[in-house]
Length: 260
Image 1 (cartoon, rainbow, N blue to C red):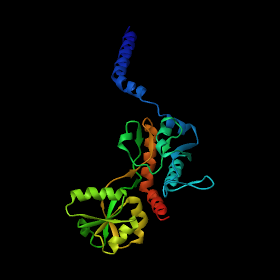
Image 2: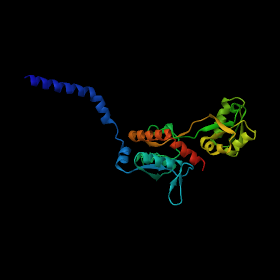
Image 3: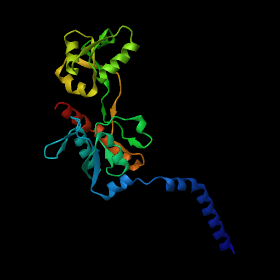
Image 4: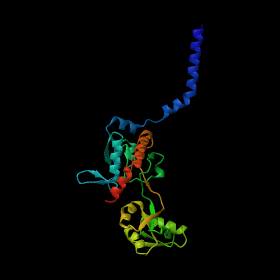
């Protein structure tokens, strides 16, 4: 009789614990399966969608070989995940759709984070900042708060400069034919500062040792995109990106490709 009561008590206890855990159990069961991560685990490769038309990030050689910062980054990410990288060519407008239909697990293609895409897709932590930067002279960059700013006519820097001019009274925009000419305008004293994008800054500033970045004016972070239900894959990618930032791998890759 005592054993029967003990058994009944244990049954009731297990049932009570089960009821307490039921919401957590149901949440786990309701969580969408990460199909992309399942494919990566089952295969020896992770497929990256790429639009190889944007050097120094993405290029395609005459023999079908991919190269660029994004390609090196994807190859190293895959290696650290114990896989190899495969590249799937996609038109720029299809870089997200290939993730939705399972033709690739991730997209890496000088891809700026787009808030309008967050309903269906997700982004990794950024690996590159391509936004507009203000460049001024050394050792007195504070003078760039002033009076004139050189920009390439018709560029994104031009748009950003017009916005700045509405906020900073007296700011004069001076137009040039290229980002390099905008920097030369500062060196020659024609303009107090220049506004150029982050890619141009990394490519050109080594040629202008008397200039430096003095302000990040706009932010255009580049990141890796995955399908919105690929939480495990995204976590794995972010973990490896964090490693590569800590050990200097991403910085070395950026410096290498921006010099080319």
